[in-house]
Image (cartoon, rainbow, N blue to C red; front, side, top):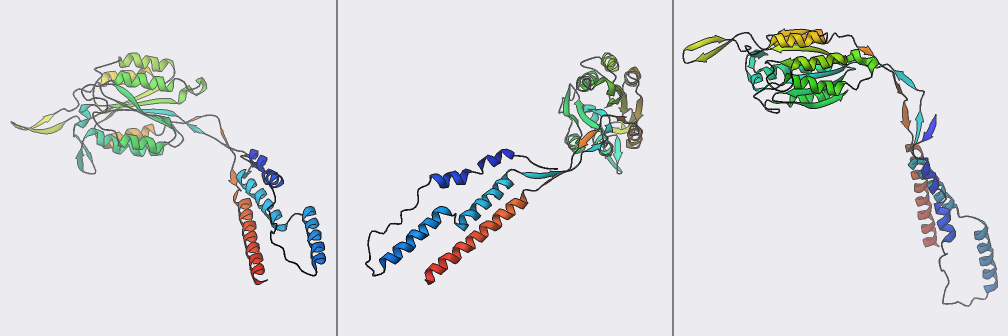
Length: 338
């Protein structure tokens, strides 16, 4: 099917004819006269030529108007549209909530045999997970003293990956962990999904601490359960770490503040699961498990392939203009030779 994006451009088609009809002819009268013996014959030829001009349009003018027609046709943006194609869309509305409190700076993780802090380890594992969630609409919440939406729900996984990569400790404070606020913000963003797709709403929370500010996580989880949001919680951090002190090397538990009981209860309230990740390998296995979540079918999208055709009439208009230019140059050369 052929159509025009801007068909109103054809209103301009009669513009050259209107200008030509109202324009005054050039004044070619010669003020000085020359007496010749064959004046009558010249006058007869001149009158005959003028009569022909009145009843015919110059060829160059016709070519110019033809070029104008093709130029307007190109400006109207002609295109070809194919048959409509239905594209099945499946996936989830998946919100990631990542803890960026001060405790995520603890360097008890190893990545590529290098000691790294927890936030760097989370980024290294989460980025491949984000790339693999093709078909999902994803969003990113960062939380510490308070929770805020870093990226709203989108199919643009590259943006999610970039915003996660650019996150840093201190963006939302660093002295507290507002797990309940993160759940509440996710509920606010996911609650508007149609009821027939409620099973496709998922929240994944990763934290290394316990809620010590804002909304109670259990209360927020109950609200999420009422509107059908499933929450998966991940407790992150090593069980032991060797630190140097005045008394030499000591073994400490860097995850002593992790509130596993609350995280389990939050997950169970919404029908989700709680996972414990003590290193990057365990964290990667957890996200591989989460990546196997069955997608929920949604309405199909309709796609109609189209192809722009403006370059065809534009090329013809340029070709006609070139012919007119060559004709004009040829006429001028003939007059000079004469």
